[in-house]
Image (cartoon, rainbow, N blue to C red; front, side, top):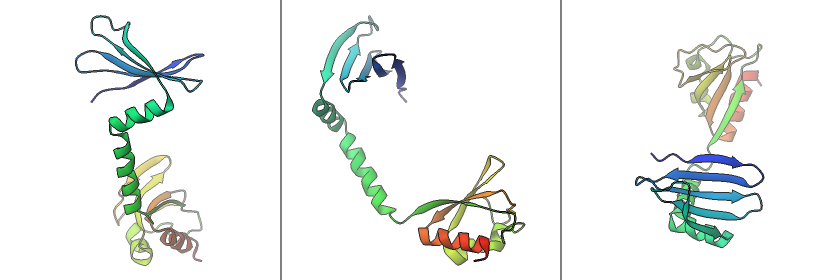
Length: 161
C-alpha cells in the first residue's frame, strides 16, 4: 500500500506526498492561505519538480472527482443511510449498579433492550467482544451498540430506574 507522508512547512502550510511505483514523487502543498499546489518529481531528480501546478478550489474538486472522490463520498452516504438509527454508547458501571458482580449473560441486556455489549473498558484496557460469562465490575465502561432508545433502557437497567 502506498504511504502518504505529511510534512509541516512552517509559515507555508502542509505538504502531503507519496512515491509512485515507478519512483516519482507526487504531492500537494496546502498553503495556509488556502492555495494548493500539485507537484510531480521525476525519478532522476526527486528534489526537482517536473510539474508544478497551482489548483483553484474548483480544480481541486474536479481532480478529486476524476480520481473517484465523489463516488467514495456517495458510497459512505449510502452506508450511513443503511445504518440509520444505529447508536453507539458508553455506559459506566457505578458502585451501586445492579450490574456490578453479574456476568453479561445474567444482565440479560440483549434480551431486555436489544442492545449488544461489544466491548468493556476496564482500567484503560479494552476487552473486545466479551462473552456472556464476563463478570462486570464497578468502574467498567460498557461499549454498547443498538438504538438510542435501547441504550437509554440499558442505563435504566443499570440504575434500577
